[in-house]
Every structure is written in C-alpha cells, then in structure tokens.
Image 1 (cartoon, chains in turn green, red):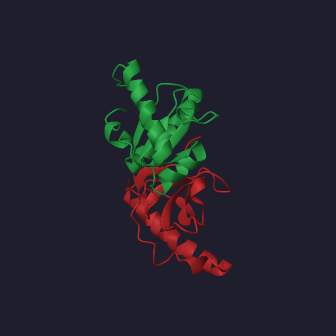
Image 2: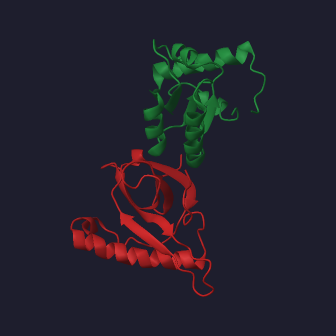
Image 3: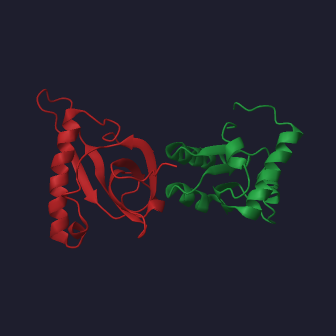
Length: 112
Length: 125
C-alpha cells in the first residue's frame, strides 16, 4: 500500500479530526450502515480499521471505488478505531457523511 | 459521490432463489428501497460443435430486489427495457411471463452480437 510513513504526529491528527467529526458532524459506524451510506451515496469518506477481514475490506473498497469515495485505512485495529470515535465498542469501519467543522475530508483523500 | 445503483448497472444477486445470477437494474426506487433488476440466468449450452448458428438459451427473470441483496459491479448493460418492464408487469403471472418472453428475445439478441461478454458468462463460484 502506498502509505507515507505514519508518524505518531499524523496519527494523532487523524484522531483529532475524527473526534471533531464525532462532535460536530454526521457519521455512521459499522459495516451494514457503511454499505448503506455508500449505496445511497451519502458517505464522503470511509475509514477502515487494519484488522478488518480482507473480504469485507475489499468489498467496501469496491463499493467506494464505484461511488468514487475515498477510503482511508486507519493505522490501528478496530479497538483503536472505536476508542478514537469515543465509543466503548469496537468499530471496524465507519463512514463520514457530513464532516461538520472538521477538515478530515479535504486532508485525507490523498492518503489512501 | 456517484449514485451507484442506477439503471443499466450490472449487478449480482446475492440472496434468494436467484443468488449468484447476474442481473441488470431496470428501475430503482430509492425510497421504497427496492429496485427492479431483471436478468439473465445461466447461458445454457453454448453449443460450439455446431458450425451454424450457435445455440444458446438465456433464461430471464424479473424481480424486485432489495439493495442489500445485490452486489453492484463496474459493468453496465444498456438495453432499453423500461417500456417492457414495468411495475404492473409484476402484478399478475401472465404479464410476468409475457415480459419475460420479450426480455428473453432481447437478451438473446444481445448475446448473439457478442457484446457485454462479461454479463453473459456464468459467474463461477
């Protein structure tokens, strides 16, 4: 995967941006709703944890490719992603529908 | 964000009796969250031994399917079926059979011209 070296700094910034989206924007968590948001083309950015099962990961990526929506592979597993969303459960994929005040959409898409 | 489940999109049916079959979306209803693919089951017996016209049969079905039970693909199939396949075609059995017949003809024509080859090959799984 073409990934820039994920330093601690950029990782923190993704977390910050995610926290901002959680507070101010709209998002959906977890696989079923992510697919739904892709199907009715509401999702703007998809974030997938790194221990997402590969079949599911490729399915989401395929849908996102069809919708021309960016996919971001989060540098952490679903436990970390859940924590980053401020939730007490594991989240393996999430879809950002409306970023609110965050600039996550503008800064992330270059980063596959 | 491009809408992906548009008419003429080729799609694979995931659940139900027609699971594993390829289908084409004829009309999509976003609110009632269903759409109407109709499609093409197997291509039965493409007879390559015959030198003359290849025999091939296409079985068609028309169905209203929930989006959740479909997998969209990057292929499209442009056949104009909007006039033949309508909602009332699904109301009664004979109408359904009649539309299936017309669809079958169109599909077979399309198959014979050799276009959309992906659509007319069986999905192997």
